[in-house]
Length: 87
Image (cartoon, rainbow, N blue to C red):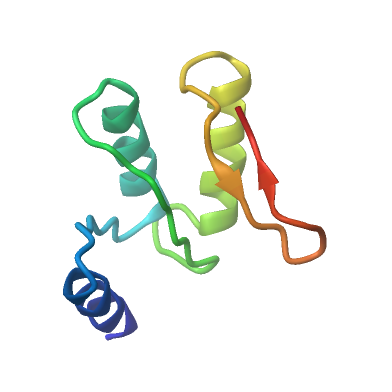
């Protein structure tokens, strides 16, 4: 329910949204983005997702960035540190 409400609010504000129902779908979306099929500017991720949790997804995303499989141009919000911008 929160996912639908957030998507509706973002669309009403003029943003295009894409929903991934689990961490694996989110990784696939990032792969499509890196091939130029989509343009992801923001990723809101829940820690408790089915198939692959948000934390597992972030670990895999970082691994793929380090291996050069995905570009590293994402902003990361760390609740224990300041906002970081990665290039």
